[in-house]
Amino acid sequence: MICIVDYGMGNLRSAQKGIERAGFAAAITSDPETVRTAPAVVLPGVGAFGDCYRGLEERGLVDVVREAALDGRPFLGICVGLQLLFEGSEESPGCPGLGVIKGQVVRFPDSRETGLKVPHMGWNQVRTVPGRANPLLDGLDGTPHAYFVHSFYGRPEDPEAVLATCEYGVEFAAMVGGGNLFALQFHPEKSQTDGLAILRAFGELAGAEAVT
Image (cartoon, rainbow, N blue to C red; front, side, top):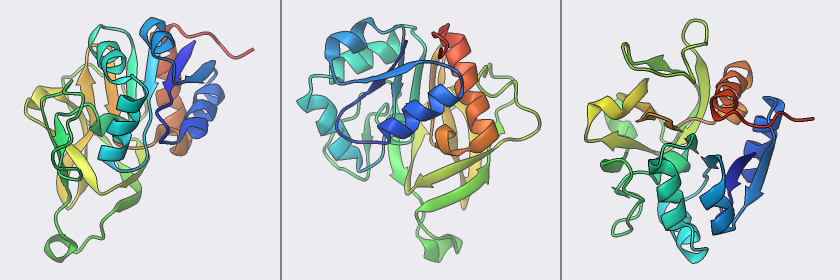
C-alpha cells in the first residue's frame, strides 16, 4: 500500500485518485507509525511552505517523513512536497525544511525581469538530465509535458540531485532526488497521460498493491 501523508494541507484526494487511476492502492494517513512502517510514501503539497511544515510538526510527522525520505524506501514528493525536502524557503524565512536535500527554495525572478507572470501556472516541458538514472521518466516517449502551479522552486547545492529541468524565465529543477527518492515540482495527478505514466512507474518501483 502506498501511504499518502496527511498534514492538513495539500491535494490529498487528488493525489490518491491519481495513484488509483495509475492502477495502485493508496491510503491517506496522518498517523506517524503508519508512515514509519509504510513500504512507500508520497508527500503531496499545496500552500505556503511554512504552513505545510507546521502541519507536519503539529502531527508529529517531521521525523518519520524525513526518515522515509532517507532510508531507501520509494518516496515521492509533489509540489510543496518537493520544496519541504530542502533546508528552507524564501517564502517562509526562519522556518526550517526537512533538510533531506541541501539547498534552498527560491522565488522566480520578478515578472519585470522576465516578462513572465508569477506564479508559473500551466503546461510546460520537462527535460530529463542526460546520464542520470530516472525510472519515473525513462519510459516516456519524447519530452513529457507536465502541469505546474508554483511561485518558488528548489535550488539544490549539489547539481547531481537534479533529475529533470524546466524553463520559465530561468532553468529550474522540475525533479530532484536520488536512489528511490523522487520529488516533482509539477503535479503528475493533473498531467494527464504522462503524469499517470509517472505515477504508474512509481507504483511499480514500490511493488505496490494493485487496485482490485
